[in-house]
Length: 401
Image 1 (cartoon, one colour):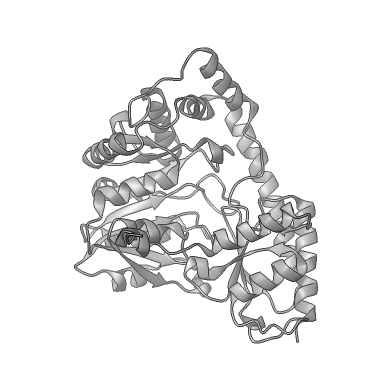
Image 2 (cartoon, one colour):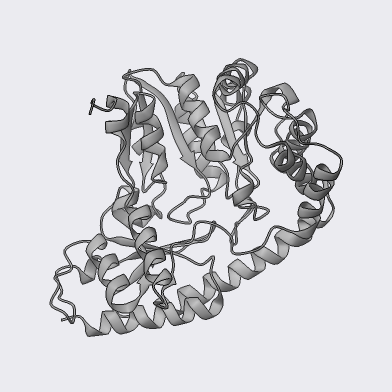
């Protein structure tokens, strides 16, 4: 067989998918696996959004739309950005894509040439470096510190910039850590970037899921020049429990939007027409705020439950999450110990494997996110599963020797 492309060979396999696939297989075989791996809300899409999709079907809204999205959805996004973030964009500055991941890939295609460096603070969402590599760029990882809640500092950013730096990816609130940058912290980063020509890819997909402090501050609001070099990424997946609908978007300078729209027209063409109609309703309907309030209250309750139970497990620490729906649990104190069946815990990945095979609890090891010695636990699952799963983890930890 002929050799695969170098591009395909550069992409790393996902530990997250490996653990998730194993957990799903065990469930299918009848094992009562509790999974902390969820990367999506466990809420159903609100009825008013589903109703809008049904209306779109009845009215024949099933044809091609403009490749970069419908005018109605672009206007709704522009209104959201102005209302929530104080950012002014025209519909022509907005590109609607098949989910925020697609939006991020479009950005990399538009900005990154072979050899260009893209700064990625670690821990990071595991897809970021793979997208950069697919575009023949070079991911440059900055190892942030646990004592700073794994948030990039201005000093760390300055030290990572080289003549080859083309862009930086900022995720606020952050997956996997749940950290939320304060306005002052974002402004400190912006002050460094203001002195450069570096682009900022600002992934704000968890923006509405913040439980402590103020709403996140978008770096695009810092100054006109910062806005010109910032590409804001967001979507409806986390905010309105619409992960499967695959609608994300970018807001950027017109030239960048035009480039991304043009490339999208030759790859996927337009996002699903019915999903776009539904997403427009998601932003404009009065029920949206009440749904979001209920979902946030539920996640906040689960967040507190998870922290309360983790506090009682000797040997475990965690980064206090302020947003998203994840907790990064520090398991470094347990490494080197042996499990009941004699396995030495030499990494977070080994611990995740042991938890799944012996306790039937699925967690995501931090090697996936560019840092060693942590497990990511999602609280986008029921209170009952959180309690039962953490009891299993506590028993596992107590049994170590």
